[in-house]
Length: 124
Image (cartoon, rainbow, N blue to C red; front, top):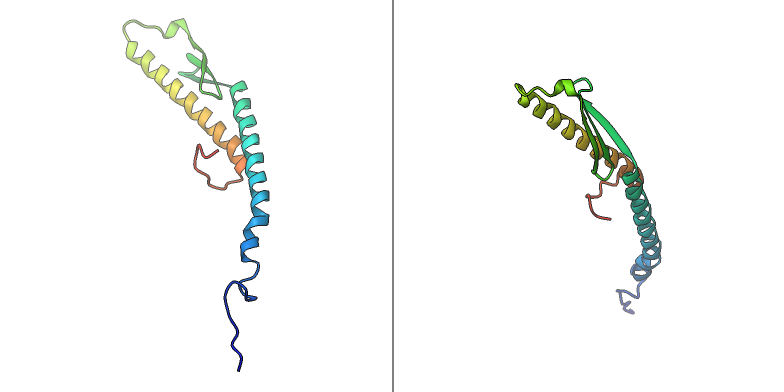
C-alpha cells in the first residue's frame, strides 16, 4: 500500500493561492473607478442648488449640495416685532427642510453609484 500525502499539493488544495490573486487586481480597479465616480458626483453636488420655502413662501432658502447656504429671503410682512417666535420657527423649519433635502439628494446620487451595496458613509 502506498500512502498519498494530502495538503496544498493535493488536487483539493490546488488553485487556492491563485484564486484571490487574479481577482484582486480587477476588484481594485473597480474600487478606484467607484472612487473616481463618487468624487465627480460629490463635486457636481456642489454645483446643484435646492430652493425650499416655509410659511407659504414667507421664507425661502437656497442651499447647494455641499450644504452651503446661498441665500435666505424673508418677506417683509412676516417680520412682526410682536411675534419674533413665529419668524424663528419659520426660519428653523426652512433650514431643517433644506438640510434634509440636500442629504436626500446626496444619498440618491451616491446610492446610484454604489448600487445599494450598503456601504457606510465616508468609506470612499
